[in-house]
Image 1 (tube, rainbow, N blue to C red):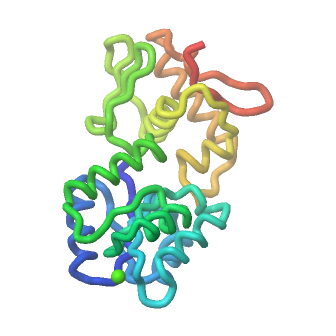
Image 2: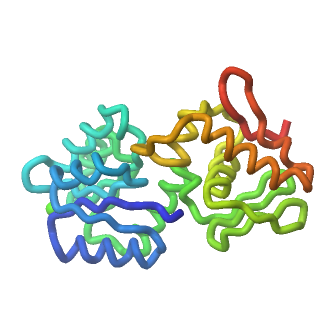
Amino acid sequence: MSAKILLVEDEPAIQELLAFNVVQCGFQAIQASDANSALAHISRELPDMILLDWMLPGTSGIELARRLRADQRTRNIPIIMLTARTDERDKVLGLESGADDYITKPFSPRELMARIRAVLRRRAPEMSDETVSVDELELSPSTHRVIAKGEQVELGPTEFRLLHFFMTHPERVYSRSQLLDQVWGDHVFVEERTVDVHIRRLRQVLEPSGLDGLVQTVRGSGYRFSRN
Ligand code: CA
């Protein structure tokens, strides 16, 4: 699953440059030229990250970042602010408004992409395309392969996303509804027991390698991915 990146920028040339580079890197680009159209996109579907221009007509990028941080549904979306300002005080203001990182224009596309990858790695590791391994289990998002004790195993798309999420968030207990939000996405209305069905399938695939015990049921709470 490639990350969806919402680009909020009113200057068409920069908007195109951003979209071109984001798509080149294998991400999906969603384009908005002001805060209102950004909010309209966000209400339909949560992006995995926002690149947010500071100086926008109408509501500024800073104001939009504050609003997103104040809303339960949007508070965890990683945000990178884009700005022509280089003043240190502005940088502090940008970060205080809730941005995860900050980049000044003109920027090199390479630097921007490195920042995007770094923020995704930190904030949404399941969106990164880096291979993850835990114990004798290895999952590669770019080739969509899972190797369990040296043998390739076949997973359905949902089990693959579920396993990727678990492997990038080990040792924490997630409730069924948290897993639905994180793995199935928000605005998806499926019953919580759907999670159990996919957990069962995931365990079945891992069973021959003896690694099914990594997916643990925590009574009354949900599930945890753990070596112990
Ligand atoms: Ca602007």
